[in-house]
Amino acid sequence: MTDPTIPFFLDGALSIAQGQGYRAGLDAALLAASIAIEPGKKALELGSGAGTALLCAAWRNPGAQFTGLEKQPELVELCTDNIRCNDLSDRVTVLPGDVSARPKKLRPDSFDLVFFNPPFQDHASAGNVPKPGKDTAFVGNGADLATWIRLALVVVKARGHVTLIHRVDHLAEIVSLLQGPCGAIQILPIAPRAGQNAHRVVVQARKGVRTGSKLLAPLILHETGQSYTARAEAIFRGREALVF
Image (cartoon, rainbow, N blue to C red):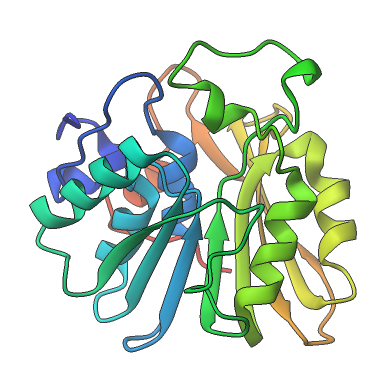
């Protein structure tokens, strides 16, 4: 189970079993904190895993409907259990399916917002392969970044939002895939400490608009030591959001 003393999980507001292997943390928390959607609207997370970002985003956006898509049967089951244990079954669900083959239940132009944290490597040959349990979260064999973004653009409505978090060295590819179908591309760098280069980016875009792009001031995660900055701490504990 998640440790309620860890700020990522909203001061213990949620209890999220993680299963074996991969443990969700900073990236899932930052992605969830970047999601803002009105009550009654519908959001989809691609690759929801155990449901950490999905459930955190739902907690932050009461009244909105959330759907997750996950290809690993054991994680679909775990995510379903986590939804039920947190009493969110009335507005959060998870579907089995792969981003490389859109399930029929995910109809085109049907979601107001789509968000995701895609694997950091397109193929196992791109670098070291993590141990089993982590590999599918980090290596997207059969579904590269373009596949994830294409599916998001198919199922999101016109003027809807697409939001993702990724390594900063994929930023040029992300922007090139979003430009044209989307406008209002906003880029939020995430830096470990003041004076250090960003290692993550949260990118948000809006389908079918012409508004220009913005490079936002970075979010700094840590003070000189290991403690979080006041803003990062407030975001992880659910007292603030990442506002674009």
